[in-house]
Image 1 (tube, rainbow, N blue to C red):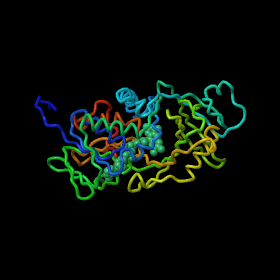
Image 2: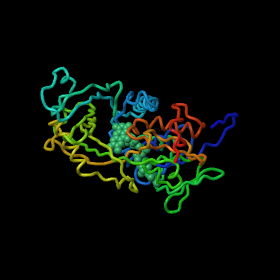
Image 3: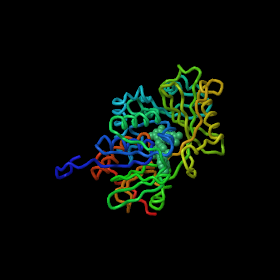
Image 4: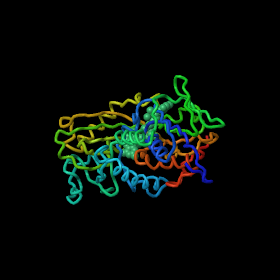
Length: 377
Ligand SMILES: Cc1cc2nc3c(=O)[nH]c(=O)nc-3n(C[C@H](O)[C@H](O)[C@H](O)COP(=O)(O)OP(=O)(O)OC[C@H]3O[C@@H](n4cnc5c(N)ncnc54)[C@H](O)[C@@H]3O)c2cc1C
């Protein structure tokens, strides 16, 4: 690397903690920019929310707020990564059409509106609007994406993966030291903490800001008549009963012809590790019941259940990610709290963090409003 005075500098050694999409994207773009990178993961790569998400991507759904540029830049970056990594074959990347629907309403439906519904959506449903086209919405398999990107980071850019639990970080005169279980120490010039909902469990960060987990359930159904399933995302509103508010399950058909359904989210305590996040049977049952109301192809007799899971979305009080240098801890950076859109935001967050760590500032997006210094604890 060449510094501002034209001097050749040794590559920076950066330790990235957390093998979810945010840690892996950060490691990938750091290494691509010339850093020597060690990635530490305690459990398995994309074993948390990053392997359980719907992985719906939208160009425009964050428009009008502070997340707009992050979303737009990331949608484009996902598209170019999919070309580079052959994403349509290797991780199920594809554009799709996105609609809103209301579930559980009966009575006649206006014929013109019925035209927008895919043929497999034949249940007690009223169509709403088309809110995304193949130009503005897409999807991928988040676990396959994260693992494909890490495989490239390892094979082409030399990223080293260490399986260990991070227990603490010390900032020293010359650099940073990451303490892992068993007493090991891993040193570097800088560290990026991308621990998802576990970020605030690190003792050094607990008093600086709060990232907490919201539990979201999901099921994957394989219809027996899978050829009927078209590339569609459905944002549903379902009224479970008169006294109860609406719930909003999302349906994403996948290139495998499976249908992934997820929602709603609820704040919970964060257990010690991703494998200790268990689904609640009532929430799973609700999703499977709504599926049967939306489509006869998804009724219990007509599907094989491929998975019933729950994942923890990393959230913050103001619903914005937290990305930047940790106050009072030089060369110690955080990248977490990406909430509902972490799969979409992954690549741009990775580029931004790599720029911040190696160049001192991010150019792909302005990180100012995501700074951890905004929290007053
Ligand atoms: C059901 C569901 C549906 C979703 N749908 C979408 C969607 O359609 N579109 C979208 O854009 N986003 C979606 N999201 C959100 C998205 O999945 C998350 O925002 C994103 O995955 C967060 O990634 P992360 O890397 O920050 O966290 P995680 O995926 O949680 O990764 C953190 C990693 O850190 C590791 N770790 C934790 N503590 C330690 C430690 N002490 N030492 C070492 N490693 C540690 C964990 O094991 C984990 O692997 C969804 C989320 C859920 C749960």
